[in-house]
Length: 557
Image 1 (tube, rainbow, N blue to C red):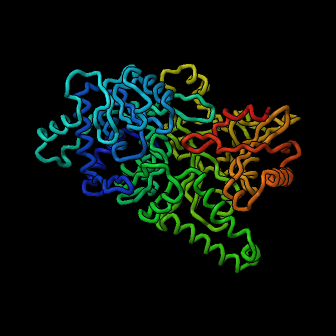
Image 2: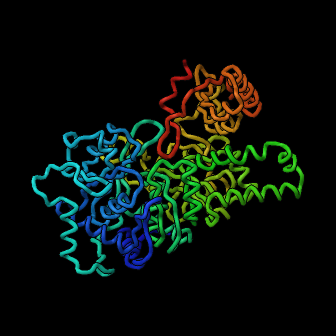
């Protein structure tokens, strides 16, 4: 399945806006703000007039920073269909990081939430001529001396140009798929942010894949709670749904479980994309306590009776997510093995994909009915190739990929680009894994986090952490190495600790018991010698991966 100019990225949206004119397209969840495809097209046209007044040219960059909203989506869509390049910035980035990205990307315009703007000033922005509020497109700052750069002016021009705005007025400039659509700055666990140059072709390939596999269709419903500035949420909940004629509801605040469950119940999404943390929390808080206590734990051992209990649990889970979804796609990090095993046991429709920002982002994925447990599915057909570099005796090595989803490089960073590509053009993912005889991809861990045992054995800390995280009073953990010994840094689940009225001494005793039990499940070369308590949640990236580089020295303390 190769992407051709017939699947032109910009023309995909020109067609979709025309064909789905009267359907609802986007909604700010919890408000009355909903735009149909026709209304969205009109807003895009107004922004095109605004861009023209600002002197924005083809391939100029537009920076965009804020929470998921209809206005966020409108700016993104208007930018790429104008012929400019969008630079999405994660709303959780600190002011200094955002400033670096805006300047490094050479952005000419900035659309930003007023909360994020508080930490910045126009004097610090090297190339930006106008700053607009994402709330209402009001001018927050400008280097222009005239008044033609206001949203009000663009609306007046729109009213003069169109007596009525119809489908035939939606006509975007020609833009070839090999051209750049976006520059996404990574927020990884290493602390170094790089600008991933993504061509239109990579985005068009994802869209075509999801529509061709009938995961997205006119009228499908989505709840977007992952940040749209991150590639995973953006490609499915926004770009894919909008291309297919679906309707997305945007959660514009921190997606607490209570808010999400309410949104799922009201929207009844037809497909859900999530990071593992959501399912893992639901399992640990709602399911594990039910099935671990008598008499349920006894019933689960009795054939026939266990099926009745498991079917009931399955239905509870399906109802919690709205009851009408075809499946849940997990990405961004591996799903805890115990959680996945239980979900497979109850035949809950969940599958895990694998990708990275540098691949826009999907590398592998399989639909639930074809998914092999604990894998990341198969390579996206026709678009991605993969091979294992220098596999060991178990077939594990670094995953290398090549294909139409792969980035052009890191923006203004030739050294980093050269470092991440092999001489013959393969992208080094930095992930360790294997591909089985059926073509399924299995991830073992990160190349940079892999540890060596006393005799040179490979130790994957993520696998140890997955086991430890399922133990009593553990909320999350990091396995570190000091003097060839493994130490686990644990953030306790203080809610459960308080419920059981544990003293500090009793908590330490419980952790020591966890350590002993854990070591019986590990190889002889990877025992945990000590568990150290950490009083706060670990700092994470927007896709909820722990920023390990912040904690590596704590093993020495």
